[in-house]
Image 1 (cartoon, rainbow, N blue to C red):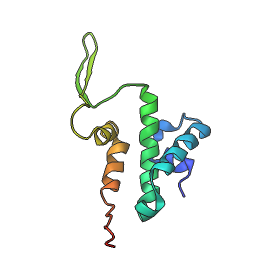
Image 2 (tube, rainbow, N blue to C red):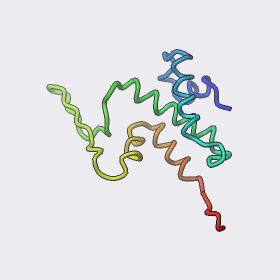
Image 3 (cartoon, one colour):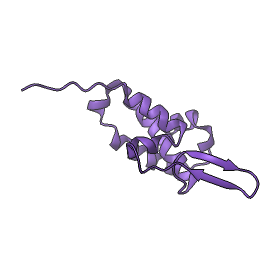
Length: 114
């Protein structure tokens, strides 16, 4: 079972978040990772998904991977998320999302022939 402390241990930059906020995002992540499907990987998936969601929350609306940064006159450009798998691309915005995808890719769902 994933605890708030688990989230804080993998994402030290989230220590300033309240327990209630982390628990809220943890509950959202639990709903997205079905225990039957994820099996032994569920806790890891939930932990990294929670950290990913909280990191996006802290960014407050910025989206896409940073593809260009300038220091003079401060300019930041984000990658276009309109192409490819939008959902998977959204996970590429944080190191926690990338780890979540790697864990998710370990799951093998075998079809049941009836």
